[in-house]
Image (tube, rainbow, N blue to C red; front, side, top):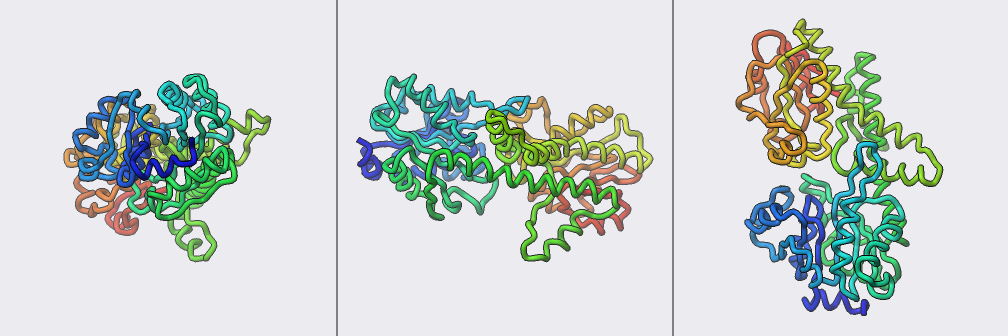
Length: 438
């Protein structure tokens, strides 16, 4: 029943479905549609209509690709019954108390379960802690379908590694970890992904190993960035430029080149909490991982405090100071504002009586207004500022000359917080700016 599924997919006798068409799911659906018949399902009817109209709101593949793809975009869950190989790529966020929010994943399992047909293989890509696939997802699929895992359907896990906004590290160019509940499933899952992943496949020895591999990838990066952020705080107290220190240290062959910054998004700022949550369930309280999270979660407040300190140093009134923030997305050259840490800067400044104007030519305006109640100001309309915070390293901001930066300010001392260090510090300090960077 399962042995010939791969061949049937190749022959277009069976279809593949992609459940969840966001920044991760949509590029996967488009990639597979070049080889197989693909159904792209998402509950968001508005999003589906946007795709059908030939627009890529994520900007991950571009409008031309969406207009020419053969993906059958739909919000009708019954169409999932047409497919026998299902990939689930829904978000796995955290709650306000930093515990895992599995509701989107559980909801996807319920939808898929009531539309599952015998002989199907379900592969989960959502980031989870080890055990979720087999202990939470499978029981829901069984309950909703009335079928039994291992007999009527099988499951696998292949963690997503797509890096939103990154044109170099794509689905096709990143080694794909795959796993399955048994050898037959593993073999089929590997063959299917080999159709689109040019970089190759790594077969994990179990689903739990694959789940764990994904969750530690971003935990490791989070800890390294936290170390850089802590160094930044220390070096500022010493009057040393952190970027200069890292450039010097980076000349050693084995120095890891991480940099300080705001850590947001759906992976690095979230995944460590999934791992520590599971550890807590087993009676172990994380020390290093949670320490890193605390440092990174505090960086928005730290930046806001330095805005205020800079205003004081420049003999400017803090309350009602004219501050502009350029960049609101969670990372550069990406429209996604969900879980952005720039909002922490905004909230903290408001505590000081500062209501900053915000501009971001790359961000999703509708999403930002819906999630945060923030309306952007066009960059060209920002004038007469006391302080400018370059929060996100968009290419559009990297192209700014000193003259174009000058236009943002009114008379008096110009304060510039260049968080990612994308501008020439010496040039701006020589021009009389009060310049600060992480």
